[in-house]
Image (tube, rainbow, N blue to C red; front, side, top):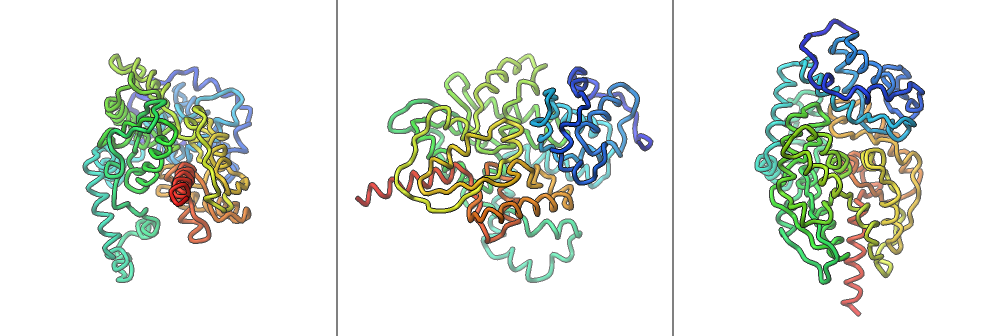
Length: 440
């Protein structure tokens, strides 16, 4: 390792339960599951190698250096290693604490990096009003034709290369956000349960229709739905990028918006968020005011497909969709939450839908939060591999349950296939069923 930039006392890795670091048996079962190890075949680029580096730092044998920081940000955080690990190593906790320590030590500091982290993590994704304001401006820029005009004008050539490369994959912002599509309280004809609905941040701006579809499906299955206003980011973006202090603030804010005692479940439809939302008890375990509440919270957060299967959702009738579909498993749904069977049950319940299994369905598509921004070359390789697997299925529809995966796959496959959330396909089937009945 190179010479350390700073030798400040450990904060986050020093506070880490050392038994978690010791769990790794160095068996190597994680190696074939790790995208970065498969790319380089270097031990340091594997989960086992990274844990060895973390342990050496915790033991005081190594310092936190720029090289260590770059290594931890080369990791996708896809959590495939957690599924492969026979010892049950809590890699997500190690991963988040390591990145938080890197930020605490400042070994990756540059003025530009500090500015962008401050702007995104501490401003845009910490203040719902700011996120929505930017969303409104982006929508106008895209819908008014200014976007197309700027692209034709050649003005984009004035941007740095990395921004020019990112611009074409900018997600389309919806005209109406979740609060305009979903009432704060929506009740079914016959109430069986009462749930809270999480609208997210990116999900709210770019996939608000998926949130609406989720509410419709819940209503169709007897769930009364409470959707608090101005929810904002749950903090997963912060925790995954080394800002645990702000992640704690975001967690408290989102928890305060729900009356847990009155709800049977808290519903999420975004895999990356859900994986983080289910672990607030670990994040807030030292907080005297929120520790107990966080345990209750963790027990009530449910992915939409997980919840539907648990309550025995109603299968739509008719033959509304006649299409070949394949299913990409979002990393933080299958590896982070252990949910793999339930989305497939939802898809198989839709009449006319022909589900074709996807080769390497659990392999990361390269989105991985902001990985396709920070590590575009490696992300592009994973995207290309995923698209090739999808094309071999012959499917014209790809189902996936995470906004990042949705965008990464859609940008890669273009017009050859449409990408949708499983719950949106179920909502479409329910709507077609109602239309058929009204016509008759």
